[in-house]
Image 1 (tube, rainbow, N blue to C red):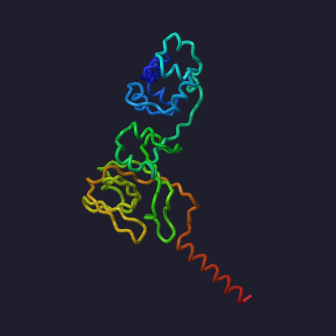
Image 2: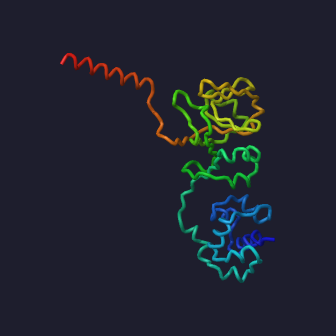
Image 3: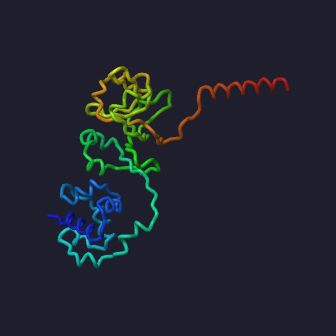
Amino acid sequence: MSFFGKNIKKIRTVKGLSQSAFAELFGLKRATLGAYEEHRSEPKIETIIKIANYFSIKIDTLLTSEITVNELLQFKESLTTLSDEIQKEQFAKVPCITENNTIDYVAHFKNDIFVDEMPYLQLPINPTKNFRAFTVSNLEMTNQDKGFYPKDIVIGEQTPINVIPKLTNGTLVFAIINDAIIFRRLYITQKIVIFRADHKNIEDAIFKITDVKELWKVRYVFCRRIPDFSTSFEDKLLTMEQEILKMKAKFE
């Protein structure tokens, strides 16, 4: 039996740290730390090493024996207040859905501990809102060489199911439907939702709103290449300018 959960709870108590404060020191969520302390989940080795190094405790001691209060009082006291002395900029941690964990995410997206252990991006966006990152894996959202390609990443803000009917038609979203994640444009007709691809050869996917388990409205995009920001209108202006220059050259 590992003493890890019991020991970190004792460390918190002696150092006067709440679960939230302790979790923040090591990039964890409070729910994850609670699961460790209650022996409902085991930490990764990286987490064990961080905590052991931070408090100058041997890993073997942290895992295999119950630490006494006297022992704790001998550890580096100054380290417990270090995080309060440094002004930290809080970046939002955005769990990332990838090709490798998509199936597991669909099965466990309501499990906070599973979500906490997902790979994540840290971004300078509103940390009070709930975001997910989704890695594009197909060409459904391309049109005439423009759009989204595999390995591009879209960042979505969670949209409550009851708010879906209020979204503007054509909104870019990704959603859990049945046992899959769909990334397309959303169109709404009464109680029906239509997920439409930008690729002209992909048929619409049509469902009831009640079939949607989770939906994220795309707010940010990361592309693996420099996007083409030109428009057909700008192309026409450029063509006209070139023709005018040619005509001008003939009369000079």
